[in-house]
Picture (cartoon, rainbow, N blue to C red):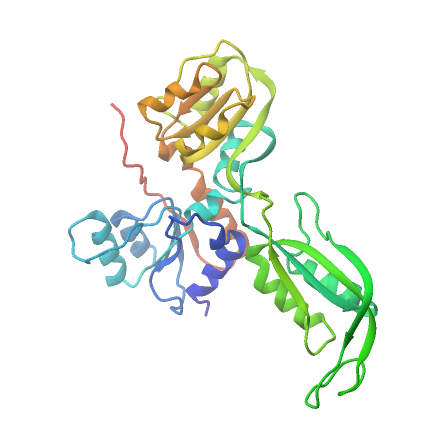
Length: 365
C-alpha cells in the first residue's frame, strides 16, 4: 500500500522545498506521513469546501498550492476559516500538503505556465535565486573516474542551464596511509601509498546534495572518501521568481490587453497608463508581484503582468512599460492543472483527482 509520504517525496523531488522562500510554510502541514494513501485531491487552496470534496471522493491527501496554515496557530478552536478547515481535516484524517513558493521558484512552474498561455518565446527566469548552487570537489583514482562521474551525474551533479554532465578534472598525486584498522582498496595498512588521481569538480543544485553524496560514496572505491562541498554566490538560472519572454511578433497595446483578458478569463484588468507602442518583451509573475517592481527598472521591458498591485505601484511604471494586475486567482488558476498532470504522470495507477471547487474568494459585479 502506498503511503502519503511517498507522494510527499515525489513532490519534493519535483519542486524541492529547499527552494521555497523563507517566509513560506510548505510541505506536509496536516496529517501523518505514514498513513496509507487512499486518493489525492489537487487544489489551489484548502478550504472547508475542499475538505468536503475530498471526503466525497475518498481522498485522504490534499495537495494544495497555497498553505492553509501560513503563520503560527496559537489555538485550535473554530474562530476563523483557517482553524475550522484544519479541525475538519484532522477530524476526518485528511492530510494536507502545500507546495506554494517551491513551485513559484521552479523554472517550469507557476510563471512558466502563464508565459505558455500567452505564447511567449525565448523564456527565462527573471529573478534567479541566489544561494542555491553548490560545488563538489573530490578525488578519484584514474581507473574509476568514469564510473564515479556517471554515478554523480545521474544523481544530479553537473547540470548547468541547458547542459548536463558538466565537470572539470585535474590530474595529480594523492597519498594516504591507513591505520591498523583500515581496509584500503589500494595499498596496505600502515604503509604510505601514492596514487595517480583525478580531482573532479562539479556544480549542482542544493536539493540534490544528499543524493549526490550518497552516489559518490557508493561508486567510489576508497574506504574513506575525501570530498568538499562549497556554497557558491552564483545565482541559479533554473530557479527563481518570474519569467521574462518575447512575443514572436509585437502586439499593438489593445490587442495585447485583449489577449491577456482572453487567456486568463479576466473580468477586468487594472493597468497603468498605456505607453503608445507595440508590446514585445513581457515579464509575468503569478500571485503577488509588487516585490519585483524595482527589478524592472532600467530594463527594456514593455509589460509586467502580476497581481495585488496597490494604487501607488502603478506610478512606478513611469510611462516606460505597462503594469497589468489581472487578479491573484486569475494569475495562478492553471497551477493546479500543472500539479495534477505531474502526479498523474508519476502515479498512473493511483487515484489523483483535480478539484472541481472554485476557491477564488474575489467576485466582480
